[in-house]
Amino acid sequence: MAASIASEIPAGEDFLGHPKGVYVCFFTEMWERFSFYGMKALLLLYLTKYHLFGDGPGLDLLGAYGGLVYCIPVIGGVLADRWLGMRKAVVFGGILLCLGHLGMAFEGHAAVNVGGQVVRDEGALRITYLSLALIIMGVGFLKPNISTIVGKLYADNDPRRDSGFSLFYAGINLGALFASLVCGFLGEVYGWKYGFGAAGIGMLVGLGMFLWGQKYLHGHAEPSAPHTLRERVAGVPREWLIYGLAIVGVLPVAWLMWAAGSGAFALGGQVSLALMLMIVVLGVVLLWFAWFTGTQCTPVQRQQMFALMTLIFMALVFFTLYEQTYGSWVTFTDRMLTKDIVPSLVIQGGTPLPWSIASLLLAPLSFVVAAHMSDRNPSSGAPRALFIAVVALMLVLLVRDCVVLPQTAGSLTYLGALFLVLLAPIFAALWAWLDRRGLDPSKPVKSAWGLVFAGLSFIPLAWAAQQVGMTGQMASVWWLVLAYLVLEIGEMCLSPVGLSAVTQLAVPRVMSLMMGTWFLATAFSETLAALFGKLAAIDVPEGEVMDIAQASAKYAHLFWLMMWIGLGCAAVAFIAAPLLRRMMHGVK
Image (tube, rainbow, N blue to C red; front, side):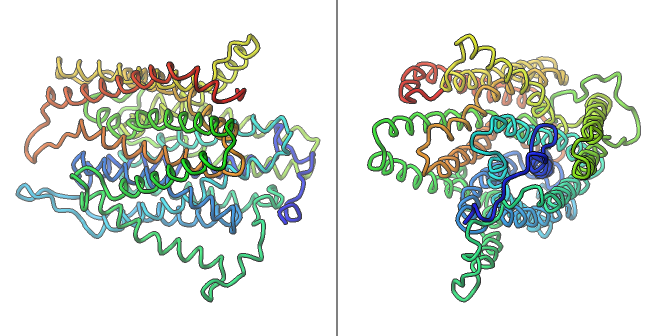
């Protein structure tokens, strides 16, 4: 059925060596990640500085939000595979995301402290919880399906497939990079509603790009069995029943957000309802895994599945460390680090705008124009020249914003994506160079190195915290730059390797479920990162100032702990690597 709907992509429809549909997915995902990371860069600062949440409740809400964002896509992927098809799932998810970001732009009244009691705008907070729930549900439908479309745009034996996914991955990081520079800056300098609003506008543009580009997907995103969507279940067409249940499901997710933010129903005051839900899901997955590997696998498949689960656990540890970048790293930067990379070049006075706003509009617009020109005259070199010129202009504007804009704790989260973009081609060349000499490390060894660098990335920040404690003065932002560089070297070692391992080691008929398990590990890492981040939670009573020595000692303790967790798990991973390599049975 799917084969009759989808059509082959004409060879003449390539653009810069790849199908035009890949660029449609690239820009859709770029805008989705722009909206997601733009909102995430601001969320903790917004809660603590505007609604006067303590660090602990703010981190709890951030962890619950981040965890469910990576948990729900497991369900969204199954619904798209089984019934909806990827186009309908992406469009529905995009609409929910737009509504969620629109709600986040409503900030209400700032909280005030009256006689030691914090008085908040509860109505505005309820809209915030509902908006976060809409975003969670929207990502659940959009995220797992947009990447699946990319894979379908290439034939099984097409050698461009890997580079196409690399291009798509660049879109993710480009969106994250611009998100911090634009949303993070606008939110703290102009007002929270402008940062959140920019994220929402970004998602609206991304949805528009996806709808415009349908002709370049050639039916590959359509449902495999459209007639099943028209079948009535409980008197309602199945398609509308799915949409209706998803919308109704937003309400309990919003309630979970409220429970996390208010500390209600938390087990021992620490384990939120959202985390309990994820623990239940993890328990079900582990029971299924034990049954499946014990009764449905050959001995070789069993060992490969166990090796894969071990690599997924390494990823869980890595991202528990990595997600400190949106928690403790943000609050530490806000309180104890200078912000400007090159202070002498920073614009003084006034409130300048990020020029990258123009880049975000120029990039998709230039592709739309170039694709139209290419459709009319496939042999012309003008579309290619136009697109490359706009990309070059984007880089110029990006460098300008990094150097001359007065940075904030939220906007500096751009460093992670920036280093990923810069390191990606270096690592691609490095692995190829090592492979030609027979020295390419195995996947378990690469993952172990990822944990090493993740642990080492906390050393510069621990030193910075100790320096602040001794001098009472803010430490240099260059400690943060160094920390991000080391951390992203670790991500380049571990993250692409893990995703590749899922497709190579999972038994084919459960590959989607194992990819869901990868996302579930990421979900757990978000909530675990929040729990660890609370070790450095700092609450300053009204009318008092922060005790710099005490606060810096808390941060230093957390950062050294994170370092030892990373290096300790890396040591275990190195010891286990030879066994894991044998269990992979020739998979490289």
